[in-house]
Image 1 (cartoon, helix red, strand yellow):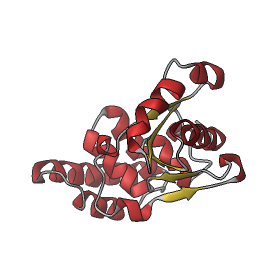
Image 2 (tube, rainbow, N blue to C red):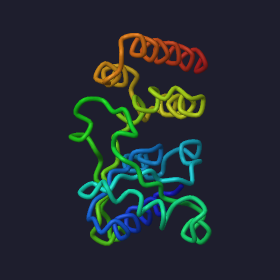
Image 3 (tube, rainbow, N blue to C red):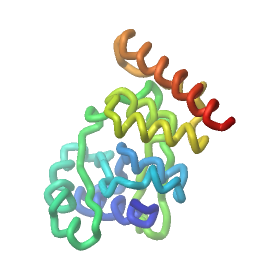
Length: 181
């Protein structure tokens, strides 16, 4: 996904949900902070969004803009409407979102999850693709490992999960440092 496509997704999702704002949850939220993010971070053709003021309208977004919709066939990307509960986010995440409001969003606003919050959330899922996504964020210096560990401490997860995530960040940081030499 490109930043232009993200802006289109924001505008289209707001239009379908009759809302002025959406929260961008998934991996493509990184485009809010880094519009020209590394190509490995832009592989997804899906924008995950929550209508901010009318979260119950997420299904309308899926029906109109979701996978295999006419929108998807026309634009080669799609928009997945979600509930905020679909993501496990660190405490205070809403105060750190990155605002995307440009002429291309036509007065609509996308609140993108900040990079460290996004990375922490991705690690909770702990799927291979999510770990690789966070690894690239770390490798490209889009996130700082110490700040990421702080955000992991703020996640609403059990101690065992938290320790696994912190250990993964430490080991990945060491691995990335050793590959630089």
